[in-house]
Structure formats: structure tokens, C-alpha cells
Image 1 (spheres, one colour):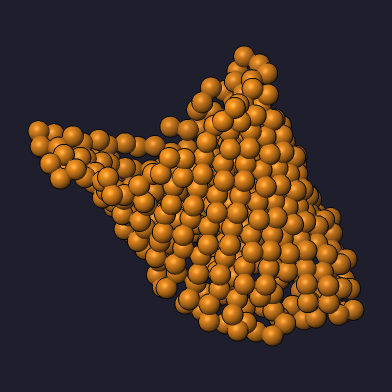
Image 2 (cartoon, one colour):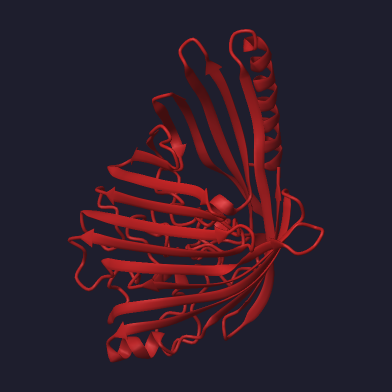
Length: 409
């Protein structure tokens, strides 16, 4: 979509919504809102063979730049709320390693083309309507289903723009220093999700917007529960707990999804994904910690493939106001993505561990602007034949340094 077309579309929607709000204001209380954030950054990489700096939208889908158009009105006689949400993403960056024409959601750019692309694009992330009442809420359309972001948003520190459990920033970079074999094997090849073929992010493997139906049960104290169905034969359930007690803020998320549509990158007729995340923060001191776990399994997978995987992510740090500008945050993180090598076309590979560690700093300026800096390192270790170990265990580490900023509106 061209920028002029996008501008005219937003203007048309705003005008129509204003007309509609005046037309129906006497009948039902109506609200309309534009919200979101713009997230941009500079990325420096060193893959052991070459290095470069590029400017691009940071963080991929969900935490990358987005604009949300939403509306709501109340049917007071029926005791219902009715509304809609349309989410669009202005993306900038480079083509993904699969050969796309722009930075596609969740598949990041690689180092061979970071300096050859100077454009952008606008994509539709979500489009849905909902209705609800005392009995809960039903959402229909292209949307975030219950187990999306289960392994992301239980972080009570809110330091998610610089560091989260999915392997967003590095998954499209090529692995360098291989003794033999193809040089276009990307790091994401060793972080393959079973539930979503082609999604090389390691954790949050049902974490894409899908066409489906979602039902959120009424809130039960500190606990919320949601169930969902997505095309085609994908079912999930999520349970969330959030509370503050004796000076501690605690978040617990759990989600389980089943993909019965042969939705696996290793063959088979179904796959399952279990995700858990726990976060705790001491409110007075600002000290916080996050622990994440994911397990995936595929039924009747191709022999020798990575059909039984697990992944871990840990983060610990402090967020507190140390200066007059706002909160500052400092943390360290570590992740391990295990046996996520996918199909057996990586000859001789029988097991893999992709390790990632990083350190980051964030500075908030009030509640609507933050800047961050992050250093992260990726390394690879595989099990398998002597030939396979010779190829992949000689790989160079990948180093990334990001300087980014986010403005909320």
C-alpha cells in the first residue's frame, strides 16, 4: 500500500467514524481512538566475517511500529459492549532471508542485503470485531489468540522493547564460518517452531495473528482465562494471573495449543505447544526476574527431525527512577533453544542448542518515550555425525548491538 493511499484511508475512516459518532450519539455512548507506537533503531552486526550498521524498524511484529484504530459503543438495554479493532504496521528495513520484498513480520533481515534496501511497506496485522457483557467477551476476525504472547507479557518490568524471549532480531542473519556446506543457513533454522512452519523465533511459537474466534471468560479475581479456535483446526487455552501483594508484583502465564492441521515443519499430522512464563518484581527496590519455558511436540514426524523441542529464557535486572527524566532499567538475559533444527535436510544433525545472551539499558522519559541500548551474542552447538559437527560447530558467533527508541501515542 502506498503512503498516500494509506493516508487517505486513515482520513476516510476518521471522517466516517466522526460522522457515525454524531449520528448515533443520542442512541448509544460511542468512543473512537487511534493509538499505538513507533519503534525505530540502529543495528550493528558482526558475524565473524563481516560487519555493518543499518537502520530499520526494530522488534518485528507485535512490538514493532503499529497503529491501532479502535471503536466501542454500549448497548445499555441489552447490557452489551460492541467494538472493533484494526491494526496496521508501517515497516521499514530490508528483505527477509526467504527473499521477500520488504521486512516481513517475524522474519528479519540478513546481513547480505541490509545495505541494498531503502524502502518500507504497510501491512495489516489484525482486523476484528467483538461483543461482550457480564458473561464474557467474544472476538471474531484476524486477531491475537489466547496463547499469543503468553511467553512475552508476564514481564512485570515492562522492559520488552529491548528484550523478550522470541529470537526476533537475529533469526534471519546467516551463520558464518562454516567449514563446508551452504552459507545461506540462517540462525532461525535452529529456532524453528513446530506449530507455525517457517517461524524461526524459538519461543512464542503460536504467537502470530490468526483468523479465528476467541472467548474471554469473565474475570475471576486475579485470574483470567481465554479459549480460542483458529483456521484450520488450531485450538488453544490460556490462563493468566496478575497480583500485587506485600510489595511484590507477580505475573504468571500458562498456555497450551494444538494444531491439528498438519501444522508442523517436520511433517506429521498434529503438533502441541506448551508455554509458561513467570515474572516477579519488588516494587520498592525495582529488582525483577523473569523465567520462561516452552515445549513443543509433533506426532508422526519425519524420522531424524527435531520433533520434540524445548526452550528457556531468563531475565534479571532492576528498573527504578535514578534521575529526573524517568525510570531507568538495566538487566541481563540468557536463552537456550534446543533441538529446534526442524527437518532432517540438515544432513547428520541429531540435536542442536542455540544459545543467546545479552545485556541492556533503557531510559524512560515520562510514560510516552523511551530509548534503549542492547548487546547480544548468539552461538551454536550441534550433535550428530562427524560431518555435521564439522560444518556447524565451526560456526562463528553473531554479535548484535542495537540503539533504539519508542514513542507511544
